Length: 169
Image (cartoon, rainbow, N blue to C red; front, side, top):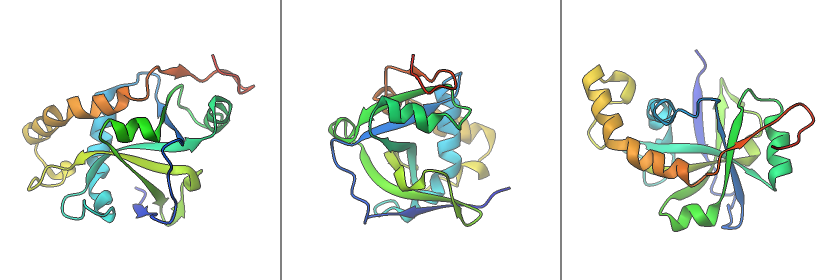
């Protein structure tokens, strides 16, 4: 299993007019996306203000436009994506922070473009998600699915990345 680490990057400014790309799998399953965000939430203790319990985040990448988004998606298995400006997300009440993600000490591809949309803090006093029993995990998910889905809706409409030539449908 890969060792992951989040590195907060306050030196990398994220302007309100920056456009963000969120990748969605073919099923665009919000509940599954939330589960993954909950599992990695302790890594976000590296972000100021979330040191105690971590944060529930949506991972995104800065892109110039739809052509840049399509090019970024060429090497991935993600079939769908969404775009939103940082300003739109901040107006909706979300904090957007630049972060690097490391796996086994190596930066993930396109890390220089990586940001996280902080949806909410991980529930204070709760054990890490992967240490909770099934009923407690369900309770945490039920508590957070609405705000998490609302954050994902900021990236609507969903777009489909197309074939190998990089065009967008």
